[in-house]
Length: 432
Image 1 (cartoon, rainbow, N blue to C red):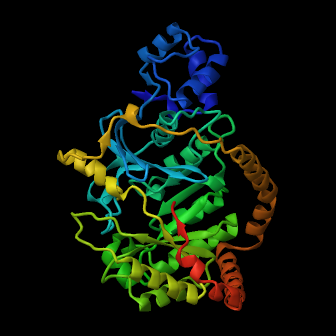
Image 2 (image 1 turned 90 degrees about the vertical axis):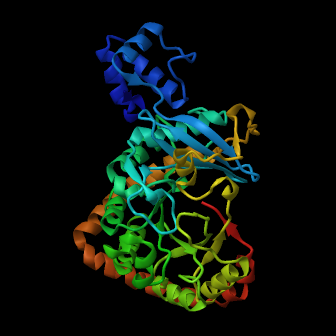
Image 3 (image 1 turned 180 degrees about the vertical axis):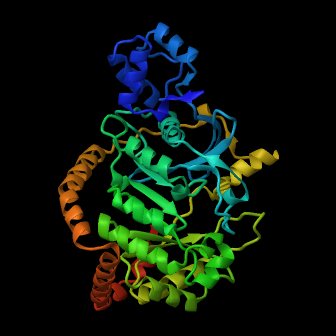
């Protein structure tokens, strides 16, 4: 089957013309599939055209909600089924500023991090249309449309390493931010990576100024190698250099993801070491509560130890927050639901989709404006960035960036107000 969500509007126009239909049907088809419509749903498309599409093997919706799981905090976790019957996961989180959807980029994951269930098995990459299909399915699930979407934020933090599926992820990002599609602002999209330096730099140079989150989880290479096999190929120093390059090219603060694991990376001395490591990087540390993965055998730390770790970072001049855990009662760790489904385990939290009620939230009016502003800034800055890159090679650019970060860090440490008000950060919580 051919996934129509893998095609741009222009490509859809060419497809319908090749089937002997007028070009304007391409726009109608585009709207229908982005609104979650299938062949059996009511659309303005003529039945004769739909029949031609089916005969030629085109599928309107290649990602379907297979099962839904509702948390006590109203988080919804989805199992999505693909054309080949593979399963992936997504998580819909409700916040006071809107709804965030966590999407997957691969079926399983190659990285095999010690605290994640996704890495227990890798199957294949997702296409751009399969990543987009998760947005389509979830948005329709909560009553949204392409013109008035109910999903306001996207985080690429589900199963898989996004930068290991680089081309499809970039294609997805262009689709989901397109003005003739969902028109998401890049500032409302976050990509989480375990740290592949060359791909971070490549992403920065493309001008897609999305938020970047780096799953570091250790203050040094020795510790990181024990929990993240990718650390054997990419030392932390190279990741920090790539992160500085990303900040220089996009002006986006870097988010450092740090899961506290008892007896591994959670000592106060390691907090100081982490602070020293990040001193020259414009970043925020998100401290994460470890989700239980029984196949892994690792344990998290209690709230007291988490707060102590954060206090030490704040004392050292590093901005840090504790990420609020949502959906942990419905197997919140990446890959847990999929693994249970494949092994035949049952979950008491499965609910029927039509039994889940949602309150319609006011549309995020700023989203389309943000998208236009992002494109304007990108256009305005393109000549400056081109001139900058022609004047300096990559190495000197990084050195300039590091020098700037050192100066900023010195200024930041000189401000007594941050230390004096550190108590307010302890209760502050952030989720993706």
